[in-house]
Image (cartoon, rainbow, N blue to C red; front, side):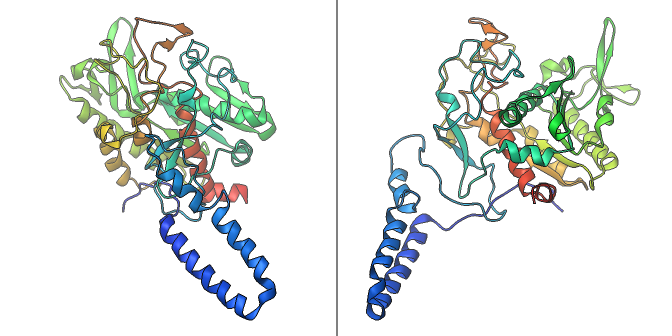
Length: 414
């Protein structure tokens, strides 16, 4: 049985259909009332006036939808009801109320991601929010999120994109809580008033790297990264891997991948990645108590290098707006296709935060040369990670919505 749990929200009738039905019903009702109860005429006209000319009505939005603008500026007025709409399928819309927290306002953002402090002062790229087709997702509410995390431990496990997401979450929560305590040089955060901890384990492959002094190490495809076991009883585990699975970071597969005592002389990245994911899945199925722990997997975040890759002078500078044509997006990553197959075979329910499409649009959201504590023109550009505030804030909105609509989240906020 497929266990991909894309958190979803109900679809709605098209606005024109809804408006037509409402119009017919109200007109018929008005005629009957006018004939039988003349004194109620003024009340009825007031109701009709609000229905069709209110700023919250579909009629108002229908004019905006006919705009020729490349980016949809229309505010949505649809409401959340149930869980039948894919919140990961949508578009970016302009919203002046964003970002949730200000550039340079959060002390927990690494220099690598603090694009504003590094000299990027075009802030238009921060004024977008993710809008699913046919439904809404709730805006991140730090107070409700803190209540859902009260007395809980949340742990991110993965590569430096997990660091992006972890720091974004801390910045969101500080907008409400105001203070957190960071434990030394490690990525451990504690909110005292809520007895809540948030931690980050850097494990870019999820499986164990076997490093040797003065000698090339190997990657143990059959063994989970050792530190992860210390956190298996966390209330929320959020995994990811992806960006390190490329030939340049794996010695081109030559004498790098290991299973048991066997070091494979030559193995492709695709085969190794599949083996590692199966090791992760087996570990989760064997070690995680699903009555206590909810497992998440955050999908692959797209890169946007032009003219090369991270190590061959690829660039993404001077990008200030999102891609608006879905036809221009990259093909769906093979990494995610493999992941979805592995998750579908697991016995543990996994909430899959599929951010791949939403990140594909955002060529404008990377640090580029605004990285590392200063502007670095002419050097290596970062077109993999994301500025903060920025795109990872939407990942935490997905996380918030997922918790809100899951049984665990519902129990916490009831």
